[in-house]
Image (tube, rainbow, N blue to C red; front, side):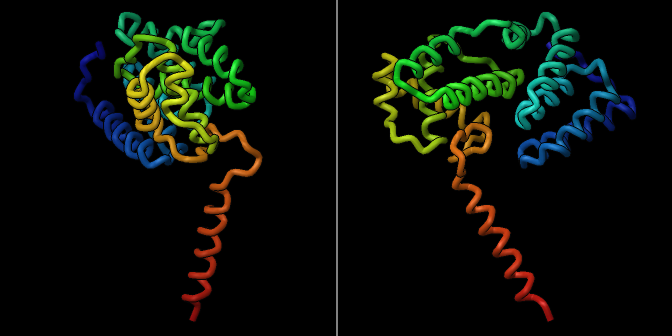
Length: 223
């Protein structure tokens, strides 16, 4: 359980940074969110939630080494937290049951190694992004199937949810629910740069089009 916070000026300032950091996290302003959570944790270094939020945004930004360092500090402050066991598993040298199942099944299907790696990365980030929320873990094959399906959809691979469900021997609804968890928690989008493994990402064309439109608008507004 998190410690009760104080009401000193530095605690109030830290909470202000935290609120700004949470907003920046939701808006994908990663650098600013890291800055806010870092300042908050410096003001109240014994506050585990600051470290947990810092770990989440670092993971979203792809800096997993620093995210794990923040989680290590969280575990030090809250060794008996209900989520500590989940975070401790992230430091294990071997793969967990989901990763083993995922690797075996995706390899058996002839899936490229890059896609398997992207799915494992998604699983790592998801477990961090959950924060204090409970990880619903009944069958490892359910999460493996959802990760497999989500990664394929991100990378525009032709696959149906029912095909994946049949391949992993679970229900379509189970894949649907866990897929939705992944998408909502990680804010996953088509061709998501974090998990897209192709050489040419279609999103690049959208970015180029937006930049061109901005330039044309600027020229149009010139006196």
